[in-house]
Length: 453
Ligand SMILES: CC(C)(COP(=O)(O)OP(=O)(O)OC[C@H]1O[C@@H](n2cnc3c(N)ncnc32)[C@H](O)[C@@H]1OP(=O)(O)O)[C@@H](O)C(=O)NCCC(=O)NCCS
Image: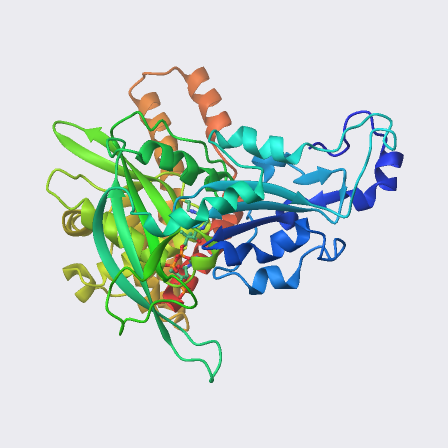
């Protein structure tokens, strides 16, 4: 939606202030494990719940997986991320937890009519979402819930790569640490039924990844890595002491797509494209586990290195921590000192052993060097700052040197040389200021990673 809906003056818009909702706040996701997770929704539709309470307290407490909100919604509701026309709006975007069948519904206290707004319609929220989804969605709660009984028979697509447990930290002294069980599957577009499943899976992306677009799944160079939690059929997570049997059901946690780019002559450069861990499962190490599994999967000789397409800041943080820990096992780390100079051999070792991309290894090298640098030692600290600024300044220096060289070789005449210098040269003062600013940003990023090592 635009700032003001068409035909509505700013005066009228202010009059309807209570009817404009921030779409990041009012969209509610639920991963529905069983019919009990919908008790509050049925009560609402039967009218026994207070319609004006905005968000029912019960609806969050009765669900096995806590409901969650999107990180962004501009791909649906425009740059302002507003929805017009409803008071106390809740947009329900529910997924059955394993099969990912989708239900879309609205709850609101009041909806504007065309008569009230001089003909401006409230946003058609469900149509806006469903038209972006490119997969079947259901608008009827009874129909959605009728299919929930099939969830327990869901078997993930593709091949099982690994199963593991994560110990959840107790929130307080009275709570016991609990082991949760997860499993990771690998699939591609040849797995029967997976293409349709992927259509449903990818609908999460636009709510959580900046600038994302859907991929062309018909291209058979895509690999998919999908993570599930194995939930007990009722109540809390599966205890590891219990034997594995059919007492659990799968719950979708997140996934990653990897494109296998061709590299000359017969090699492959896998690129991580989309990578998502849903909010209820974030910050418990699952993203790192998924990344580790991807590294392990592409470890053959024919793999050049693994790259990442447009990583988000959170992803980069996770990746830095993970890659630093890997590089701390390499031979060059054993002799790393504050005065060590970057060398190509370091990149080669990280590439051969872990398929790290040289640019990322250089970043890791700098983080690990800062870790060893005594920032209270002025000389040592100055040396570090200088090495980073030299790297940052290198492309500029090369550009100027190239122009100088062309001029010396008489490949360009004096007039063109002066023109090129004039357009490319940046005043020293401005350059230093800029380098200092860039350095500070980098140092603060690096220090966050060092805290975690
Ligand atoms: C980025 C993302 C994949 C991380 O997944 P995750 O399962 O939370 O990651 P982990 O639990 O393995 O995190 C490992 C470490 O990375 C860092 N980290 C991860 N997410 C972070 C965040 N949001 N803020 C700060 N640090 C973060 C932390 O240091 C974390 O360790 P800690 O929890 O002990 O502090 C997940 O947040 C996500 O899917 N985000 C939305 C989509 C996205 O950005 N995808 C990447 C597109 S390229």
